[in-house]
Image (cartoon, one colour):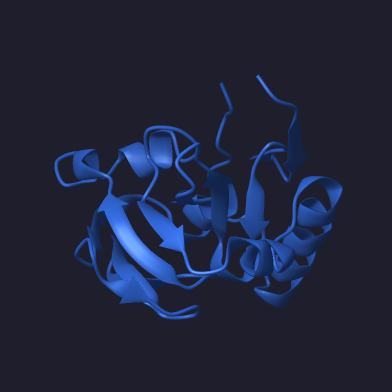
Length: 158
C-alpha cells in the first residue's frame, strides 16, 4: 500500500495524480488508459452521491468538458475532464451502487477510463504528493471549505 497524505482528515494516496480544480484523481493503467475518480475532497464537498451517469463509451471528450453527471442531495454537477481523450469505459457497478463513490473513492468507486490524446502533456498539468496537498489546500480556501461544518465527513482510508 502506498503512502497516504491527509488534509483535514481527507486522504490523498501518493501513488495517484490529482486535478484539484476538478476534484479528481487519475491513475495510469498498464494498457495506457487513465482511470479517473472523485477524490476524497470531492466526496466531502458533495456529500452522499445518489447517482453517476457517464457519457457513452467511444465519445471523444475535450479537456474541460463533461464526461458525466454526479447527482447528490438536491443538486447535480458535471464531472469535467482534465484531459482530452476517448472515453473507453465507465464503472458499471455505479449504476446499481453509486454509494461506492463515497465508500471507496480511490478503489471500487472509480468513475471512468479515458484513452488520452496526449498523456505526457496532460500529465504535466497534474499534481501529486505534497504538491497535491498544497493545491487542495488552496482549492479549499477558494471554495471556503469548512472541514468542521455539519455534513462534512472525512473519509477513512483503508
